Length: 374
Ligand code: ADP
Ligand code: MG
Image (cartoon, rainbow, N blue to C red; front, top):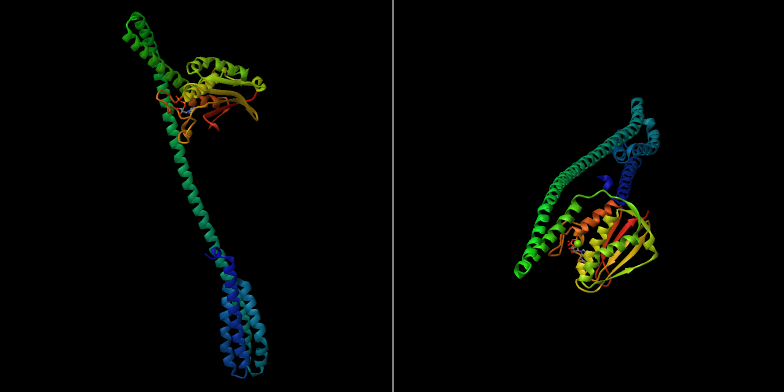
């Protein structure tokens, strides 16, 4: 297509054509004038050759090209024509004038028709382009619809599965409770028997683990309605720290609670749920750290938000697992449930807050939580 070529190339092409047209006109006119003594018929015959540059100019440059070239030819030819008048019969004289008129009309007409055709072609190309775009758009929309429908189907399936498994988890809890009580009774009954006591201890531990999995799963799969109240963030943190104390002592970990005036900032949250967030994050820090060391807990703020950050001295988080941290059941621990951070994420979503997890500069991970200010 012409409009795809470089404009520079187009310009030099046009100049070249212009020169050729001019050259042909000049050559023809020169032949006329250098041979004016020849027969009149010879000139009339040669005159037809003028149609060539006119038609080409009209086709190449439109009506303007046709009109200008035929006008120039008329100007150049008139002196010779008037010179020849005396030797012409009246019929030949009229033919001459008609010839001159005709070349002008043909110049204009050819240019006009070429231009019309060019416009039609351009319109057609435009229509073709619009049609192509439309087809593309329809195709894209079709794909998008298919994707959305697939997503909806997937969500429906997951929701149904969630309902079912939450029901199942709930049902497992009762027999588990009965098992736990029975094992405790058995342990009391066989108090002196070392082997039985040891098995009972293991059974109880596993029951406890299952129970925790069920609780975490249920709090993930069956989100509770938020019971919001206004409370100072520092107070929430203190309660969370209180609850985690046994785990800290067991692992000989020191918790440094950095206090500041930000502790007084109020948030409007469901205290139980936020305490669960604090616990899950602190538990992860403890589990990452193992025995000994120090965990930092401090209040942080950002525009419109206030929250806390937990920094541990564990191994930190590798780049490979980073994208999956919030996925339910994703865990790198032997006895993990992989639900802690999913629950954290869901609760923060419900509160309009944010969670960020990154690696600490020196060592360990940093988990930050931000809640909207009242
Ligand atoms: P779980 O603790 O049961 O494994 P979570 O959802 O709480 O499940 O955590 C998911 C995973 O995120 C963990 O298995 C661990 O790999 C990673 N993770 C979470 N917190 C930390 C942390 N403080 N340091 C290192 N890794 C962490
Ligand atoms: Mg966890």
